[in-house]
Image 1 (tube, rainbow, N blue to C red):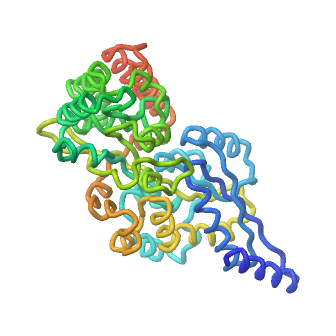
Image 2 (cartoon, helix red, strand yellow; image 1 turned 180 degrees about the vertical axis):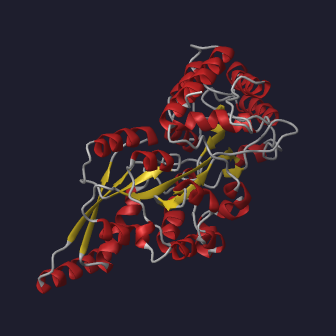
Image 3 (spheres, one colour; image 1 turned 90 degrees about the horizontal axis):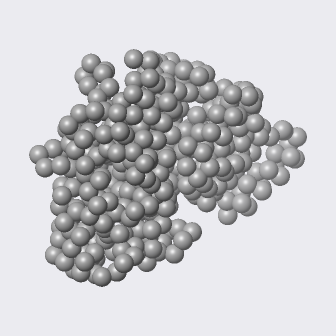
Length: 420
């Protein structure tokens, strides 16, 4: 039906003699081109003077970022709109790589009124010193996914502490007797997921990467406790030896194949587990979702994630791009992403939407977890800070650095990145 509407609109446009404005949208492989594609078809049908197409590239945030670095450094206008990770707006603002969006509103008051329905976290990332550089496509947070059938089988409730998680994982592994069953899977590869792996445990031990005065605090008792915990996951056997190779989507695939009891991962994984996935799932109807555990006496904490729609400042079609940006960030588009891809809505109004809650009930159950998700380092030098944390963590998981060596290297690297 959508294709028919688009064809009718295009034929009408040709008959009227009007030219169509082409727009190219860049998205990553994990950002469900199978869902975004039909949204673009709908937009084209409703806007016959524009024809929007998309390009897919990069399975991770890092690979997508490398490609966009090349495009934007060359000042190319080949792409009109692109998705950027929630950690990138400050960097893009400082580099002049995202078109300021204030110009598309009649006034600052009108812009702020438009933004009221969005959750505060994504807007804080995109609104820098009063200038809006992107609109949220969806927000995100990491959850603890678990095999509800196995926890029920052994009389367990979802763990609230890391020690409970270890105890349950060991019991289930031993009782099941399956050598392929992992107790606890998380991300340890040289990518963004590993920063969250580290920070979430650090926060849940009462620590942080900086103190109230902005001093880097990566060599502390809290950080040492974090590293000791991850050493224990490997030593106890609840985590696979090759965790240093574990990317976000590889974690998801291994859980989906029925080989994991507990896993850290993002909102998108839920739709895959229900069967809306290119890979077969053996866990449909067997998956539970909970907030991340913490160390005894401390609060659970999760990383904020999500992706933002930005306009290329070198695009020759900025007005048309803004019309598409509004459409893609609309409640209707975010509802489609939530229902079909389990992308967590960045709009407040969708947390009471019946279709969204029917598809992903935990979005409503864990609303507080989502809105209180904490930011990775917010800085124009994010690339350098990110590398200073994730590379030593990856080397630690690969047993190339000790816990103390990794923390010392992180401390030194982040200080250098921030020019301390």
